[in-house]
Amino acid sequence: MKKYLLYIILFTLGLGSCKKDNDKPIIGDVDERLSAVLAEYSKQLTDAEFGWKGYLLTDNQTSATFLFKFDKKNRTVMAADYEEEPAESSYRLKALQRPTILFDTYSTLHLIADPNSNVIGGTTGMGYYSDFEFAFMSSSADTIHLEGLLNKSKLLLIRSKSKAESERVFSALSDVSEAAAKIKTYFKRTTIDGVECEVKLDGASQIFSLSYLEDGSLKTVSTYYYVSGTSVTFYTPLQIGKTTIKEITDVGFDTGTSSLKAKINGVQISIKEALVPMKMDMTAAQRWYDQKAVNQNDCWVSDKAFHAEGVDDFCNFKSVPNFQTLWYAGSSVFGGAPYDGMIAMTTSLMAPYTASKMPIDVKDGKAKFTLIGSAGTFTGTSPIAKAMSAARTILYGGAIPGSSEEWYLIPTSNDGKRYDMVRAKDAQAWISWRPR
Image (cartoon, rainbow, N blue to C red):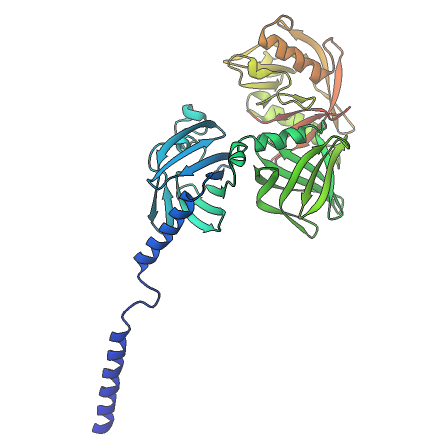
C-alpha cells in the first residue's frame, strides 16, 4: 500500500513540474496580439495612396458617402456627400472588445450623428442615428467592414485605386440616378433568371426594389445600396428565382435602345420602359383617398412634389422661400368647404391653392382628379405662383375648371401609409405621398 502511495505522490509531482514548464501561452500574449492587429489595420489605412471611399448606412437607414485619407500621425482628412469640402480631424485605433477606430474630435462624420437637428437635420437628440466610433468586423486587402459601437451603423471602406476614382466618389450616385432617369416612365421592366421584374431605383433613399408575380400575387424584395463607379452594390443580397444578386455592374444608358444596360453576375440585362403596373391594385386608389381623412390634418404631403419629364421637383418648389411640403388636403383644411385641394406649406399654408371635385372619382383602379376652381394668384413671376401653376397643370391635366387627369396609386409601405401616384396616360409623371 505504501508503494502505491509513493507512486501517486511521484506522479503528482511529475504533473506539477510539467505544468510549470508550460506556463507560457501557446498562442502568445493577448496584448501583444491585439497590438499587432492594430498595427496591421493602421498600416492598411495609411498605405492607401488615394484614400478610402466610405459608404455609411445608419441605424435609421440613412445613406451617406465619404472620402477618407489617413496619415501616420493619427490625422484624417474627410469629405462627405453632404459636406464635400475636405476637413481635417483626428482619429486613433484602440483595443476595446474588438479592434476599434475612434474619430475622437468633431469631424464631418460627427455632423450626421449630431443630436442637434439644426445642424444638418435628423431627429432631435439622435441626429440620423449614426456613429463615430467603429469596431473592425472584417477586412481584406481593399475592403474594411466596420460597425458602430452605439447605433450599429454600417461603414464600408473600399480602397480607392486612382485619383480619378477618388474624384468621382460623390458623383457616382447621381450619375447612375441620371442614367436611370433617362427612362422617362415610372414603371421599368427587366428579366432576371427568366422572371419578369419591375425595377425601382430610388436614388434619394438609395433603395433598390424588384417586384415580380408569384402564383398571381405581386411580391417585392428591396435592399439599400451604394454606388461605386458604375456598380450598384447591395448591403443585403436579393434573391430572384435561383439567382442571388449582390450587385449590378456596368450600369449605363444605351441611347440606341433607350434602355438601361447592366450586368448581373456577368449576365447582360436590359431595363426598359413600361406604361402600366405589373399587377393592378384595384382598391389602392380608394384606400389612398380614405386614408387621407385618417391622416393628421386630413391630408397627404409630399417632400419633393412632382417628378416629370425625367426631372425631380419639376415644378421647382425648391425655389419657393421656406418651402416644406406640398399637400393634397381634405375639406377640413379649407374650413369645411365642399372640395379637396392642393396647397403648399411654407411657414404656414398659403395661397394659391386648387379646389378638386370631392370625393375624387375612382374607376378601374385609377383615381381621377377634377379641377373645379383655383384661389389666389397663379400668374406672375413669384416662385410660389410658378410652382403651383406647374403643379396644377400636372395634377389635373390643365388649368381651367373641368380639367381632369387619371392616376395610379402604388402602395410603397406595408402599413398603407405611403404611396406613389403615377400619371396613368403615360407613366411619365409621379409624386410620393406620406402622412404629415
